[in-house]
Length: 383
Image 1: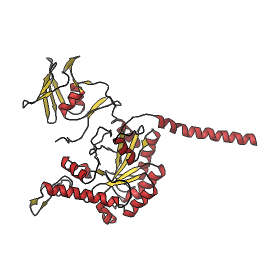
Image 2: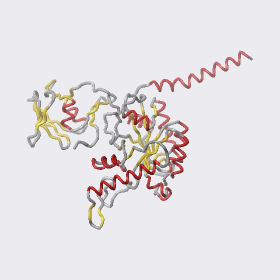
Image 3: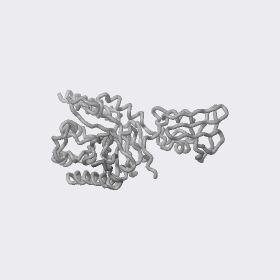
Image 4: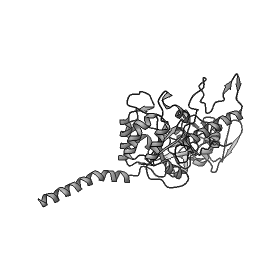
């Protein structure tokens, strides 16, 4: 009998080993380092049908699958510390929700709590006044206070106070100038409206829990330079977009990208692949790249002649140059000084990455998983 008991215990331990071994192996898998995949959801509902709605089962399947692949979920506090220089776990993921829907409290939060997955919900605080009056019911103050007291890994931040709407002409409230009685508001009036709305959102959430309220998700993902500056004056330090890229310390704190996970067509496998396609290499494999192939990878065009002359076209940026030259020339006569001369190798023009970033007006990153360069999708904040 004792021998049988020992055999049973031994088999139980072996079984546990088989269970935990894949989990341990998954956790040790390094998909990427020193960057964060910020993913975005909206409505979690088993009956509603819309592009921004998924079922609770799909949410569970996605999170379970990501865990099995070695992803590690972090809190908003960890994410902000990372942006300011602190380390972050390998394969880090920050889960975010927009709009402050009641479905987060009813359908998403119990699952997140059970799986111990941190999340942040960006709330339209004006809806807190009458949560059930919204087209899609919203969370109440009591809901938020319950969740923040129940766990230490669920956060609530700003999605504006009253700006989640569009004007009759289609412009988003955050970036549009209002017209009243045929008179358009001045830039100072616009500024005060945005600053006041932001402060109202920060104030409403600050009454509900003790963590700093300093983060914002742009309504509809629409923003511009004035809006960024005005919400910053309203108390915001970190603002989230819907640009589908990885978050690194190099991105503007007011233009943090997020990858969409809240569409019914995003299977667990597709979400995993969507993240991998956007991984950024800490260092590109080379400091000099083939001009035509690299610009073509992010939608530009390059015309290259056999004599070594070249024409570059990307959006509003148009330049001409030649092999051996240390400058590019625009159609209006402006010139761009290059750090290194254009070079002709293997019947191709090569340019340094630093010079190409100047020419196209943005940061170029390299994804080792697809072995291709991409241009970060951010607006120019320079005066």
